[in-house]
Length: 293
Image 1 (spheres, rainbow, N blue to C red):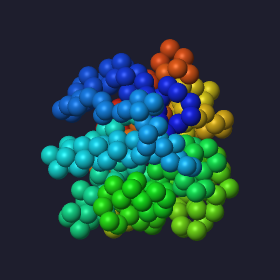
Image 2 (image 1 turned 120 degrees about the vertical axis):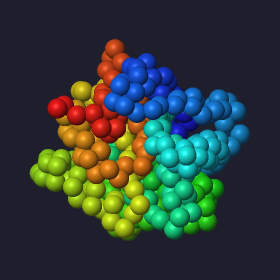
Image 3 (image 1 turned 90 degrees about the vertical axis):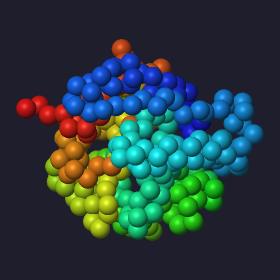
């Protein structure tokens, strides 16, 4: 799906990651892997019928996210760990909603670690671009369009106290207001520079695992510096290094609390020899238990 972004190309991201033999390498780690294929996404011309002022293609994106949420719930109910490949980050409004709804049936809550250069905390009322990939976290917290907010059910999918944002370095003014107003644990690139990945991830994991039944990781490839990962939807200079991102994934795997993950915003049109997709594969493998030794 690339409906949530203005720049085209991230709809080819899942194919680029599959091309790196990620399935075979996960199997080599001892995992049983089922690739259930692509979630159907309408063409932009058809999706325009669901357009809303301030949020382009919102109706179509919400329909896709609802489908993603159903698939995630079914996977978790079957005892699997969903790996959702993007596509733009708007899809997380579906994947995380599905995981939250699955746990809510058991009276449990979901924690989320959102590793991204951006907060994705806009609503249709505050977005300057109208791009929905800048809105999913706000929707998951119960803010914005009611249909997208309601994918997980009547209540918001997430509590702000169960969410940690990591690697943020590009926020709109309205998003800065939302971070403070909603009291979100937010670890910017300055925090990573000053304290290091280990200390930041330890605190983020503590936030997302406090009284929750598991952690969902939503990883936007643009958190990595574009010098290392150029093929992303919205590149921003000054990001995490390849090795820092690996450490974050390894630490999450070590917790044993990971219930599912998104890896999004791989854009092959902007990539160099599929470098970014290959980095995505390696990060996925680390999250699923690959170790150096």
